[in-house]
Length: 97
Image (cartoon, rainbow, N blue to C red; front, side, top):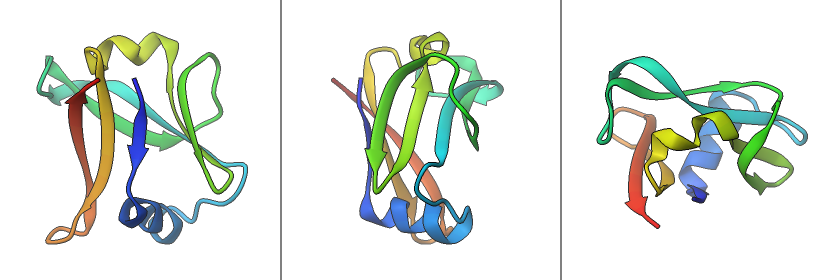
């Protein structure tokens, strides 16, 4: 699996979360909500140091990652992170890899 961050999403992280070089942003399976693959689970995101990285994408010194223990959630799909311009918030899309 890969994590793809659009330029607009990177700008969102810089402006809204004030990320900087050396930061780690984790995407994880969160209990509650729903996803295209798992009823009762949704995608969460926060700034957190990794324990056991499964997938990592680095952009300008910022690491976007998924822990090995959360790889199951993506069901062999890549995570595409963009921005919903109408809502000015992140949008997540899953594409079969």
